[in-house]
Length: 167
Image 1 (tube, rainbow, N blue to C red):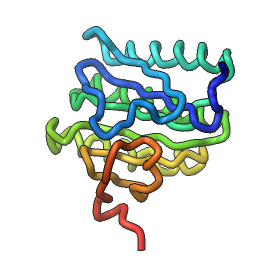
Image 2: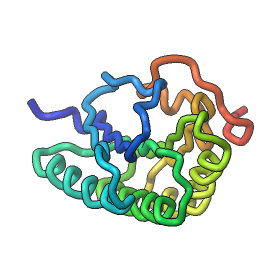
Image 3: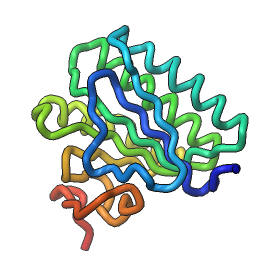
Image 4: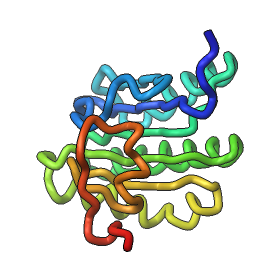
């Protein structure tokens, strides 16, 4: 059975990151790429590219991407996360846009949350030009979009961060 192209979601989980408790496992057709071994952070870039190519070959179109950070903020991890996010944005642009959520567990600390918000801020223009709605989710707080925009992915109530509240 071919997936519903408008509902396909890819969840990418960095090594040692946990499945976000807010993410509903049955949110339409969903593909998972999890880094199961502790290797170079950049190895996840290759895993995601390979998996995406295979899924697209059988008709999947990823309209929603969720990148779950493990909270590492060392230079190698930050660089790999940036390369991965930029490559996914470029691919989404080629496929007509969609939405991307950069997520981290709030228990991993302020530095991890700030790093994702900084990455999203650096990619704001790129994502807008690509037709991709970019959001950051730290636990139950969301930056960049109204919580309702991600309701198809969530298991319960969410709270908008002050910068994301809409009138």
